Image (cartoon, rainbow, N blue to C red; front, top):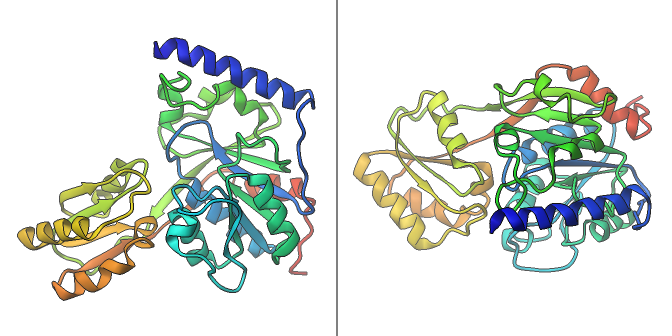
Length: 329
């Protein structure tokens, strides 16, 4: 049954893409260049840290970037400004955890909306930006983009079935639309992608680096609500931390007092600290006082990404496609 549905889904995707390729469906351009960061799968491949890496790169070259995204699992609908370039203007519930993290960590304009076209039009027209970075934009072809960055990991290649039987939103051949392909797992070989990518595309690799805590010195309990929680646990173990228990919630989960109480109880039982991700921490401000009251050490593990091969070419590919001029000069 799922295989039949996947074939039907694939047929719909092919027809949809063919209409865009033939310019039979409208593609909206906004008044500033657009860079999309996306993937082919359902679930996390590291888009958040790559978006942040690109934003910082653009800032280093004198640009004023804004971020546009859906704002998954937020309580509101329509276009909403999460950060106006000066201040945060929406709560985590109104914006979604990933948008709130971008706003908190980068301090750049962030706009969310079910329609990325509407969100981009608003950002370009009303906020202080001269380039837009779309978080999870590869399948949103109704918005013109000047550069398409697509992330690939083990999950992308290990199961090539389309939804709903598999996890692919598009077949691997869709990589031919990408300007830059970023490999997110060390054991994915660039050669394995060559049959799917355009000869003009750049294939490079990224490394995600965790800022390991140095002052815990006790067992730890991990808690997270992310798409691939096993990666977070592996990160903690790579940091040399002794993970005695993990609390894993569904991606974008909103933490309740009961959730926090359960984690605190486990921390007290094991004499452990609590560690979590930056994405989770934006939803845990209400829990900080509870951790303190119980004498629980609480740490957030920041992560960043960097290109580890073809790094100068990565910058060049992106900047050349947005009509680069060094604005720091």
